[in-house]
Length: 150
Image (tube, rainbow, N blue to C red; front, side, top):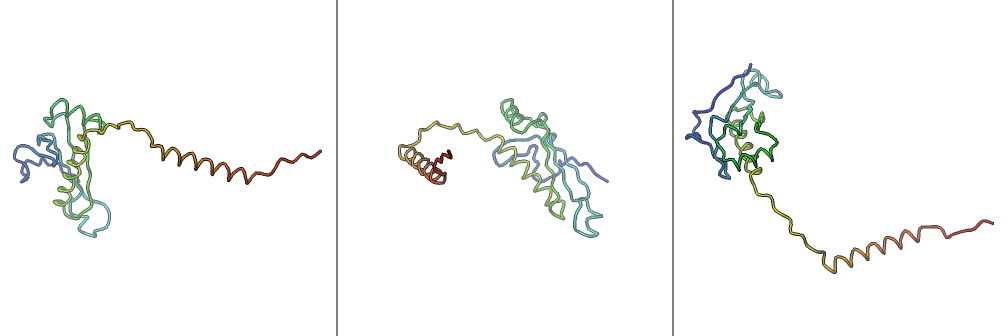
C-alpha cells in the first residue's frame, strides 16, 4: 500500500521552498510518496510507511528560464527523484529526502570552472624526461645482447 501526499502543511512551507544555495521551488512542483520500507526492523517495518520518495517537476517549480535550462541539462531531465529509506522514522526520511534534493539542485546550479591552460614548468619537463631515460636504460639492461648463431 502506498500513499501520495502533497506536503503543503510542512513548517518549511511558507509558499515556497528554498535550497541552501537560494533556489526557490514552488511547492506545487514537489510530490511526496510514502510506502513501506524493506529490510530489518521487525514488526515496525510491516506497519509503518517510512520509505519516502520525493519528486520535483522542474517545469512546475517556477524557476527562471536560464536556471531551468541549466538544471535540465545537468540533471538529465525535468523530473528529479530522490528515494530515502534509511531511518525508521518517516519524518527523518522526509528531512533527508529534502536535503538530498536540495543538494542535487544546488550542485547542478554551480558554475563550471573553466580550466585555464597552463604550461608545464621547466623543472617538471626535465623530471619527466629524466624518468623516461631511466626507464629506457633499465629496460635496455634487461635485454639479451644480440647473438648471431651461424
